[in-house]
Length: 367
Image 1 (cartoon, rainbow, N blue to C red):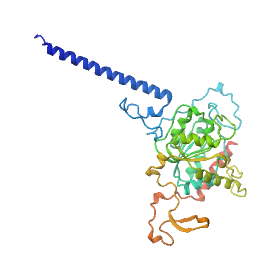
Image 2: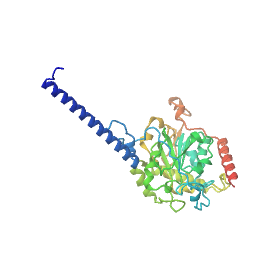
Image 3: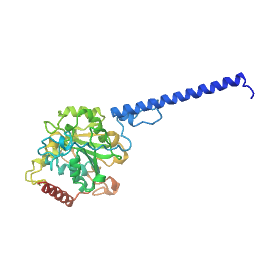
């Protein structure tokens, strides 16, 4: 065989050196990405998780305020052994659940407020809703009134007793102490009553990812102790906390929501709840707060929210504008009507009766 020239030998050495260098760089990049995966899973850092496999170093990470992409995998609660079931739960459900779960009751009238729920549909324009910490399913009221609902609950015991007719599509069993969860779609609202105080702040970022998929957040908090109440704080704490997460506190919406629930509770001669007692949504009129999530509220999909009619009818006392449906009454021929998709859902007495009957039946069967 002819001997290689010195130039050819140098070319061969150069190619081997370059190949080895490229291999080393690829190996380091793979090792860096692997470490990144481990760090992300260990810390549940969603900014890292969102961009795993995005090409490696140099790629911008997703903002912590962004809407979580896609859908997270639900992590059901881990059941306790029968020998571990030594907790005297009293009125609370949660058989087989760990102690941080299961603080639900057969019926909790202190979170039930049909008048406010109707206002959320008719005036705020809510058509889809996620109930976080839904227990057996107050979500049923919204479902019976035409709202697209999703119930997220950590207690397996509660999930097994759910009032929702199609648990496979309407209920997600997820324990936020195990990791974050968020649904595939964005929703008009999150409703979360008697939930915040049960989840330690080391896990708050996990449920906040669910809240990030909603335009409006209706959330109560506790002012007293109770079953696994590990985060009991004043109003200002939660305002600071949620605004630190990027949500905007609405003082006037908060007062509006509390006022409706308070007025309903003061009507002792008004309609009773499913338990036969006067409605008294204490959790709502006492501590509920309303936040706006601009990242979702700004999407065209949610442009129907805040569905107050826009056309002028007259001005009432103290200068308040009285609205009318555009295209109707005096001057209607000069106005354009809104598309049907921008109108709120229609509510009927039959829907009220259907919800009432189902919850009453649930209470009776539990006695």
